[in-house]
Image (cartoon, rainbow, N blue to C red; front, side, top):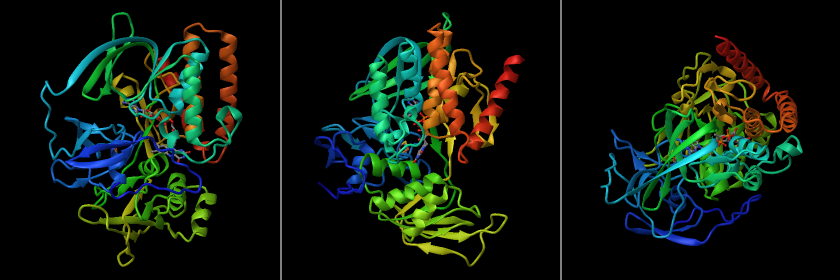
Length: 489
Ligand SMILES: Cc1cc2nc3c(=O)[nH]c(=O)nc-3n(C[C@H](O)[C@H](O)[C@H](O)COP(=O)(O)OP(=O)(O)OC[C@H]3O[C@@H](n4cnc5c(N)ncnc54)[C@H](O)[C@@H]3O)c2cc1C
Ligand code: FES
């Protein structure tokens, strides 16, 4: 193996790596394991620069790790613009950086096939919300098809190593990645279909028979299969993406999203750096800070612009006990380095958020982890004509929906982070509500539907009593009222 950043010993995780394989990266042979993404395998071998910016030719690397940015786009087996963080390595694959402008392949180089598919319930996104919707609709007698662009089912659950709270229904006591496996198995048992490595391109309107038309593509080794899906109902569960911060050097490999770092460490067992600075003291920043230490990374400091730590004090205390300083009222001034991060400068800010001269501190780090919140991934819903509203408590603009997760467009539902930022148990429960509402429209057994609805609503209202989710409950109420208003016009 070349330089190998794979973690061999971890206090709570055991990495079950697949068969050893090798692939070609710009003429060099790279050793990898089956079930690793191309970008993770390159990172593990010391390749941090995956692409270059179009105008300024600046280096770019891993950032989100879940297919939601463009930092990792490379040419794979002749096909440009492949998001290598969500595509698995395969024996003999040819991978290269594509330069500032990706050259298009000729028609003879790629093979595009076409397929049509007619489904009753199409679910876009196979995280906890999508799986929750699929399992419930399946148990209530409906055929469902989930499509997801990643090759690992379970959305963000696969990188969550903490044990879940709540009731048995919410898989209390199990870790996120274990829940992903159970939900995937449950979906299969209800007869649901799960198409991996399949991306939704867009919404293509209503057909003459009143069905929604959606275009998707499925990756193959030598091209794509374009699938035109005709669906009576759609549940959009596409999750969220990480917010970014503007500062000099923010493009450098080494500046990564918190979720991207979790994916590298917890899913692929790859050490993301040696010394880290964390920007953002909410729960995700604090949790990932602790996970970095478990993975053998030194956390030099954690900073936040706010005067108080936003996440739970229990998580902050854990870090403080391990000697990690937390600087509130501080921001990042710059990331240093040419081809990757070699340091970072932070500065104290005044009550107007302006840097206070003379308070700069420099850190010798190769990893800057950005954890400054999430925004809902809901472009598909906007394209389909769903009306939006701004709800501060839910992370910004969200599609208006009612308490059955129905949007303002007939036949289109949503669940999970796509409808406003919350957490994984909420996503699962909302998915179940959407599945039950569609089953009701389709005339499934009303007693069973009522049982699902009652249990789920009780659990949701229980969760939303916690300090952490109180605001989510408020935001949801605003949204549900708005739906009633819009529907009365
Ligand atoms: C980066 C990140 C890190 C997080 N870390 C934590 C944590 O440490 N602890 C915690 O409690 N919570 C965490 N959360 C929150 C929690 O995981 C989410 O609230 C929960 O996973 C939301 O579930 P979901 O099903 O709505 O979305 P997700 O779990 O994000 O699933 C969405 C799925 O949709 C798929 N998808 C998106 N667009 C398309 C498309 N166009 N075509 C096909 N498929 C598509 C994605 O591949 C993904 O599998 C995190 C969330 C994010 C985004
Ligand atoms: S899309 Fe791959 S790192 Fe963001």
